[in-house]
Amino acid sequence: MLPLAVSLGDPAGIGPELIAAAWRMRQAERLPPFFVVGGADILVAAAASGGHDLPIMRVSGTDGAAAAFADALPVLELPDAASPAYTPGHPTREGAALALSSLTLATRMALSDAASGLVTGPIAKSLLAEVGFDFPGQTEFLAAACDVEAEDAVMMLAGPQLRTVPLTVHCALADVPGRLTAELICRRARITAAALQRDFGIDRPRLAVAGLNPHAGEDGKFGDEEARIIAPAIASLRAEGLEVTGPHPADALFTARARPTYDAALCMYHDQALIPLKTLDFDSGVNVTLGLPMIRTSPDHGTAFDIAGKGVADPGAMIAAIRMAGEMAARRMPAHR
Image (cartoon, rainbow, N blue to C red; front, side, top):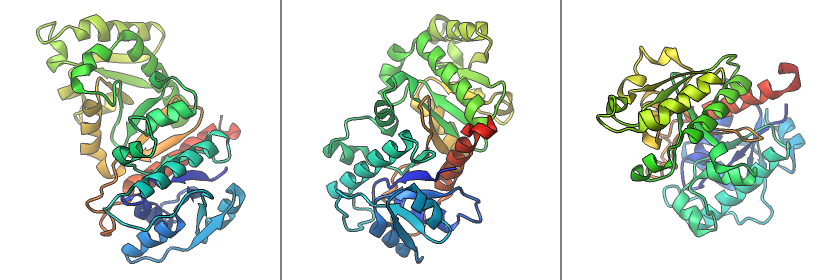
């Protein structure tokens, strides 16, 4: 299996030190081989900020990365990107430009099968916008790069205790009811079920669909979206043979008793999906993009500028993202099918 491509993320955030820690813990965590796109000097400085030496091997392609991984962290240099100084906690436009160049090339390598998948470091969207990043987030960037409809690039948050899918993502809460349609629910449910089969080895995925309103509308007392939009979508999915239940009151869907009854929960908006996932699995949560022709995972946290360079960031989510991408890639290999 080819190594995974890892994008650097914002060099002033915790991404570089987490990547360095993941390589340092590669044997204990049994991680698949990976290489980083750009930022060799920043990775060394980030590791040093936590009191660690980091051997680096600059490589020109994936063959060299696979050979080097056991003894050094392979880094594919960006020929046209400037290497800014390491300024943890103090993001710059130069750092954002490096993050964008790293993401662009890493995506291209995963999409062209030069890497077995993509793991993205956390970015600062506001700074990226200043250097030409015209997307709400990395998920939307990847959809465009893969020529996939935005509705078909599905964000799933996955942890040891829970998987959730927000059906609407980067929009104001006031806009959510207007964006919900039965077609959107059905499209994203089908993509989720197919990915759970292909990439997670679940033969017959069980999907639980949350309601939008308190008590799932309580028979129309608190809104009619459940009866008008969500329930008809669930009926259509069941008619197709998918195992789908709901709409469930969201305040009971994530309890310890409820979670074993489904493989993924489809949620109506961003925080409905991310709050329970981050509460249960903050240090091991992974952001997975479903519906793409390539594998993409990311740690489910941000740049954490406030703790960058202080040696206190937990690498658990980065390690989980690398491991999950490797497991997904292994399942996609012909011998595993």
